[in-house]
Image (tube, rainbow, N blue to C red; front, side):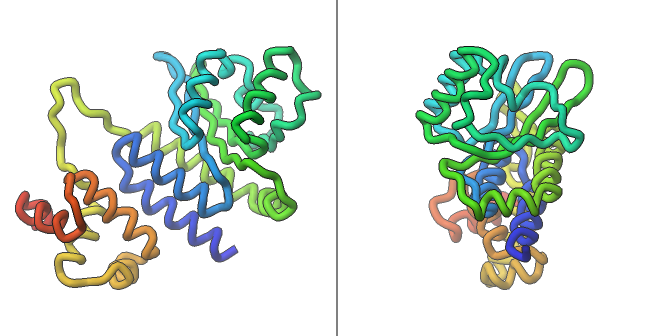
Length: 242
């Protein structure tokens, strides 16, 4: 349970620093792996159409939308569960309500997407969101974990939805951007520039070393730096750590 709590604390910390869709995708992918899942998917249906962030193979997500499966996928339909969470198994094609739904199950299995859970989140008007964690193989250990951790997993889904829907900032049409670094990324780089190790920074900020590495990797990527020392030098040169 301590590992689960640590993974969730790191998830919240990293999510607070996520700015772009790609940032949010990396946070969810890391969290899914930490919790024992292979993939995550966040689907939202808004007035301007569906949107998907996921770590599923791109060939699967392209096929999914090409076939219009988002309109008949049972995990995206109106929830009958008070908790808003659905546990599903793609091998149970016998429960399919139509030939196309049965084909959806079969196609998912062909991509080894076998089982998982989906937190379904109704929003205002006709909008809708769902957060999914999935695996390519089912085990008693995973079933036991899901059964005993439903509240935590439900919280992860709701928290992810809240941050993604409220905090993603897309690049303006004119291509202008604000600061390339988040506050947490600047904090981590500042401590590294003072000679602190990742373990030191983790203790100073009250997060895990994995969380610190995540922020430093993001900072290096956002600054187009080749190495961490290069990222520190660029951040100092641009006055981002003052």
